[in-house]
Image 1 (cartoon, rainbow, N blue to C red):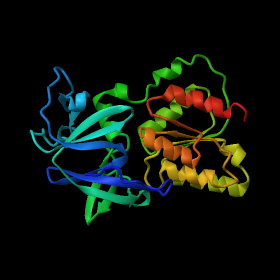
Image 2: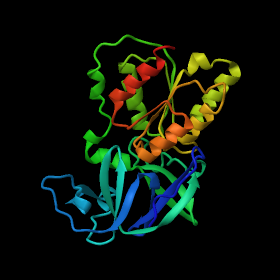
Image 3: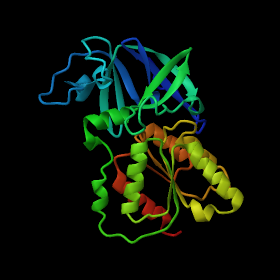
Length: 299
């Protein structure tokens, strides 16, 4: 199956691969997928997490296989089905699924954030829900799934301590990040690094509404002098936010840092074309602070 469908830059669209487990429909952003292959036997790893099926080596590259059914508390997978091999946060990981149904192009505006009745925001392993061909498809948060299995793959907040003593600064920074947990970690990390004037939002639309309001009031310099944005977010993604900011003469000089698990070769080219000032992978919280330092030092 072709997982390399080319999307135009900044259109607020994504490609969702729909797959099934136990007859239930789930989705993953195609941008995370390297390839889809038939199931291969794996070698179990002693004393590993219950959701890790084992390891295998397609094309002489060792990959960890994760039992997605186990992660979703639906029992354990049996031999067969498919492996969706992904790459994000600089990791190659295979997820075991039953079947793949197809690829759909959707707008982030059509993706609904799960409500509190489904799960608490910081516990949810879903980034959103979308209706495809009359069915509700749950888009899974694969970053959280992997971080829950191995916390070392998440943000390395300890890197902030390595920066040492720092002076306080009130340079206003606007953050767009839909994950409640990651949003809090980014804010906490920046505060520990000395940045005290922070506005954090849950998606690109909320961030852009603040930018628009400040522009109308003539208060941009007071509230937005740097922007940090994720890529994957409901309503408006980070690429669309970057395009809107960089195509407006009133805001084009505001530095934008894309901070996402999806910063790979192809995504980096998209970010550059849209005018992003810097692009970093999410584990690199120390580099995020250093990049903010560099971009705001003359402000």
